[in-house]
Length: 190
Picture 1 (cartoon, rainbow, N blue to C red):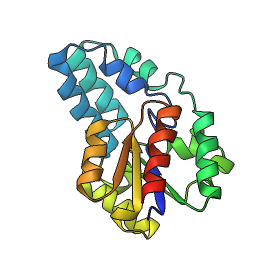
Picture 2: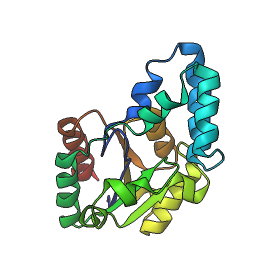
Picture 3: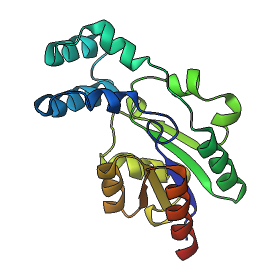
Picture 4: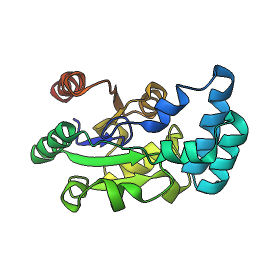
């Protein structure tokens, strides 16, 4: 039986400006850019070093990268309403995000929205990032559920695959209608 539902932030609860930026890069730069972003998310690079290394890699001026990183991020309010409904139905709710700062708590989510989540784990705080299997296990531990009692919702298929390898159910997020359809199927069949 599913007891907990874990949501990614960027690309699920919000738009994902980083992914849009990476989509503009030549294919030979993509993996290196993702590696740099992962190092930043895990707290191994500060923003200034990250911006300089992205500039060296891509030729894009730091101000362009900073603009991209600070570009308007839009909350998926309809999804947050669904999160509130799931919580009212008795599910524990988690947020698991690869991020290099406390921005989600400080600027994105209101206090009321933060209270929708029983647990929030940010990669920079724990020194690991998705798809590291340990981060999914940590979330389940903090929510006090087994991996077989949890579902991961993420827009990155490889992160969902990693969660599944640890025993979680997973839904690769495309849009809210698709999420509701797939998640409700999982919830009714377990």
